[in-house]
Image (cartoon, rainbow, N blue to C red; front, top):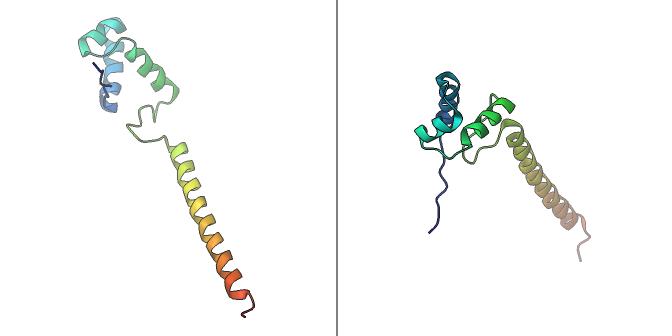
Length: 98
């Protein structure tokens, strides 16, 4: 039997942390009430404390800095391909004809 990985929306994560802080209950009690795996609430809290604004970017999304870097690397690769094509074209047209 295979287990399916559960994913949670960023809004759910952001609402679960204040619920834990304001309720006065332990993390494990809140996790049982919410039906989440033990230890997730603490992990989400740590992640939120490390990077408050972009703590939960979502599935498949990168934080702004890595996303910008990825876009620049992709643009750089395209520009290199264009340059190589132009170099080959110049070499073809500048060679003496037979």
